[in-house]
Image (cartoon, rainbow, N blue to C red; front, side, top):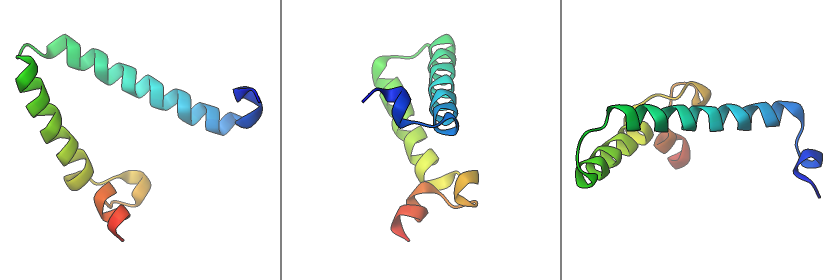
Length: 71
């Protein structure tokens, strides 16, 4: 089946918003990063930990993704 027959408009909007957000963040990252590839990997590891363990998520009622998965 075609993708268009599998998704309703609200699902499409969510997916398009996700891709827009990812593209914006990649562009922002590339425009300010001046470090080495190794320092970029370290930064991304720290960011991933912060995003999943420390940062409250509005869609999860203030819980972090890790807390949501473990509960």
